Amino acid sequence: MLDGRWRTSIEKGLKPVGAKLRRTGITADVLTTTGMVMAAGAAVAIATGHLSLGLLLLILTGLPDALDGAVAKAAGTAGPRGSFFDSVADRVSDTFLLGGVAWYLASTRPGLLALLPMAVLGASLIISYERAKAESLGFNAKGGIMERAERTILLGLGLLFEALLVPVLWLMLGLTLVTAVQRFVKVWRQASQERPAVLTTRRASRRRAARSASTVWRQNLQARRRR
Image 1 (cartoon, rainbow, N blue to C red):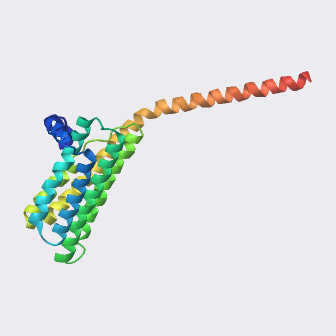
Image 2: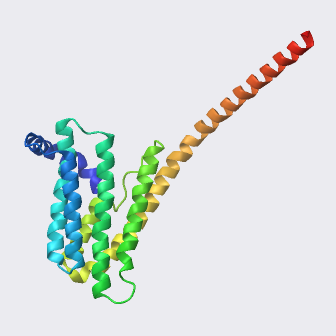
Image 3: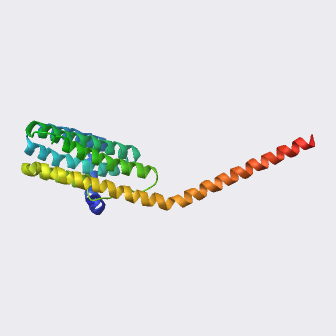
């Protein structure tokens, strides 16, 4: 939701910063890797109960994540390879962070509550897969009320106020599942609109193939009769 509304404005604002970083020799891949390392550090801090430090590292993790695209564009290296690396890095970072939260809950809370952040992770991977699969098929699956930016903000809120951590995780889970349904419906509608054209193309291809086979059969039959 925030990504769709503010992404263009944020990219314009970061463009000069990306150009300056590029002149220092920093590459987009370095920034992406730095973000993953900082996410791992945040996960360790959270897992060991240092929630304030984890929150600080979580905030700092957003900086290289926001700047790697600007640097890539300034360097003229933006493309499928960088996009792929950035997407994979985001999933790895999410796994680190929510894994750290699960470890913390397993150490401090009784029962199966540690499974809650892992459920959030599973739901977030579903919406990421929906977008990736939809785009590979030529459809658009962007959007929803709980994308990565919203999850990061809510997680930060839970780390800031420890008493809110579990309720925030439940909220993240519910809204992420709603987003998964939203994206599924969005792609389903697009695919349903494309279906008549696809079927028409397939039927036309089958008819051409049948006519071609019939023509070949007649030619062979005529050739045998001539013999």
